Length: 196
Ligand SMILES: CC(C)(COP(=O)(O)OP(=O)(O)OC[C@H]1O[C@@H](n2cnc3c(N)ncnc32)[C@H](O)[C@@H]1OP(=O)(O)O)[C@@H](O)C(=O)NCCC(=O)NCCS
Image (cartoon, helix red, strand yellow):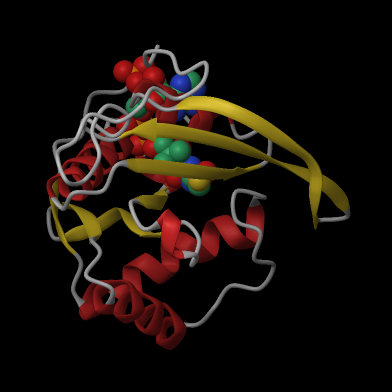
């Protein structure tokens, strides 16, 4: 599925429109039905994908697509990590690139755009919850984009008749660790270390 060393595909990264959700649906359905990257087992319909995008936008968060010659070849969005108020500066990303353009820089362009947008909005942390320890492309993409692995939840999903891990990765956005939102210097985190 993933073909290394292909020429980079220059894409336009832009906000998703409702009309894009037909192609977004097609990309997501591929991964839901064939891989454990998503822990959904039945692909949602286009209407549900439209509803999900609207819910992200209602929260003021970005939902981006990568476009190549008018075709959507990938998408990404950020949503709240968890609802408790102390998590309000922390987001979770989701990213999917069409299988026929993998390893051509689309994921990097999309995730870079998402990080830039979320950083500009004042968010401080981004978390990736990656389905399947075998999902090396997502683990490697997030590592390449400055995330570090924080842990593995062993066998917490059951998909295609096997127990599936979740790999937790995490990235500081901008000055996420060093500064409080009001501009005060933050006390250091225990054992906090620079991003590798
Ligand atoms: C993960 C995914 C979004 C990556 O998108 P992509 O467009 O293929 O990634 P890119 O080409 O931008 O890769 C950027 C970097 O990530 C790393 N990388 C990506 N895929 C890799 C792979 N299969 N093996 C090793 N490294 C990989 C490399 O460092 C790469 O840089 P390089 O090509 O210059 O070496 C894509 O593979 C995908 O949609 N996977 C299925 C869905 C999924 O798992 N989504 C994530 C859910 S959390």
